[in-house]
Amino acid sequence: MYPFCGPCTAGSEAWRAAETAGPMGSRFYGHRNVCENCGSSVRTLYNTVLWVPVSKVGRFRIIPTGGRMYVGRKVVDQPVPAVVRREPASAIVNHPELDGAPAYKQAEAYWEESEPGQALPFYQSALAEREKVLAADDPATLRVRLRVAQGLLATANYGRAIAWFELVTPQLVEVFGPHHELTRAATEAMTGARLMVGGPRSEAQLLADIVAADEFVDDDAQLLRDRAALGKALLACGDIAEAVEALTQVVRDAPPGHPDTAIYRKALVEACGLVEARGKKRDVQLAETARGLLSGVDAPTST
Image 1 (cartoon, rainbow, N blue to C red):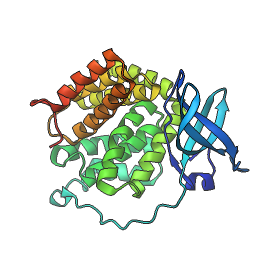
Image 2 (cartoon, rainbow, N blue to C red):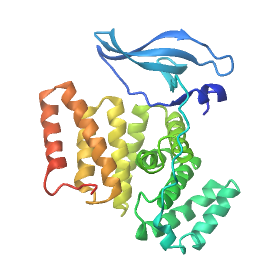
Image 3 (cartoon, helix red, strand yellow):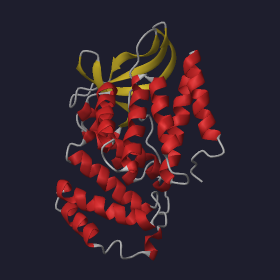
Image 4 (cartoon, one colour):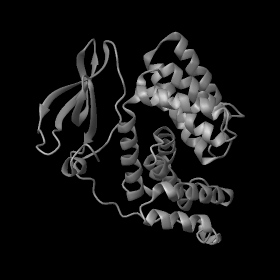
């Protein structure tokens, strides 16, 4: 994955750094194993309190990009053993017309010709047809969802691509497993999209603009997806209270019983945990309200 060379990419995995500021945060130490091909080096990341390292987070391959900016990948200390996992069953066997639909066949043809921009609108049309009869996390649906995300990335629509990858990657992990080629493709592509955007702060601003534009489009699913990605980006920026507010709105508006709702709820739970760990009174009250939504009788659920 650019800008890392092949061997460094193979020995690491995609990683997203959160922005930190003030006396409590994190810091890299060390500078070892400099790669002659891509110039990356291995550094150890520690959590810090009053700028003093207190706990080790892990080892990362880092390439500085100017000033205090960098791109990084988490070092994999030992190769992950191959896990044999049966391909999950899909309900598409009951709907063979979906694979024979003109939009899907045209999308696949353009994809095989390495024309993702041409394929994208046909994949979007095919996805709409599939989601009428298949679950959002059905294996056949997920394959097309991934293609839509990849098509958005290929056409430089980075914000909406990130929003799709944020949603579909956890679903791919759940259905296919963390080491499946589709899951790895999504993880690497999301890292590439973020590299093009330029960091969490730029990502949050881009997604905020997209969410504002969504208000004028009659597509509730798109608005939820983009707003959830904005919440995650704010979380990475350290704007935890704002992240909780954004994710709370997503969960409040999410449809009950939908697989996507489970992803949004997990993101809100993560944000609430960070708020409570930080311990600011106003923020803790915000988290209590969010947890009330999560546990309420009428709260959207994934079951």
